[in-house]
Image 1: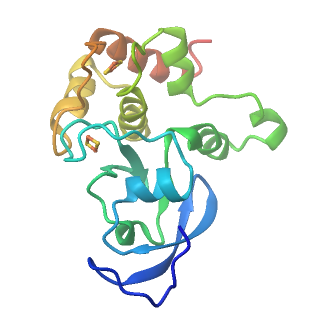
Image 2 (image 1 turned 90 degrees about the vertical axis):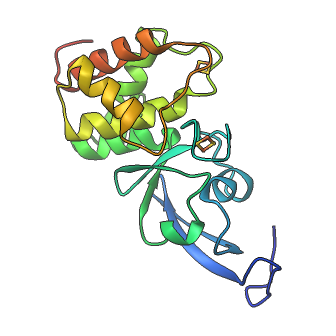
Length: 189
Ligand code: FES
Ligand code: FES
């Protein structure tokens, strides 16, 4: 949406904001209280983030903000300025950077969490899974060898609500998280 940077909306002033999304600087014009989710999907065409509840109650919209999971449906875009925003689309590049891979080495690589999700055939309908992968990535960056309890704790009690899966793929998510940890540790193909 093209908007005059000096215009004023009913909700507040429109401002020009620069965001770093999946490693790229993106400039957008939006009201400062616009949810980050809407900016990512509607302005920047970043589709690896889903709208579930819009109330921080499901986790489908989760992204990493400087490595911390946030619910983008209730995060005002102003809170993301100057921070690294990572969606599931940016996980391969994040992993490549963390491992110091060259662009050639990284070209066909998925992030270990994505690799594990494919290997374990975790998704069913898929709507919750981008948020699940973001949450598990956050966990594994802090705790590379989590127990079942650590994974369950991260997915249920460490945010504003549990990460919900209406397809009940929780057992597969647990297996996916363990496999991702093994891949990260170089113990699983
Ligand atoms: S859409 Fe954000 S938590 Fe459900
Ligand atoms: S896979 Fe369908 S909601 Fe989780």
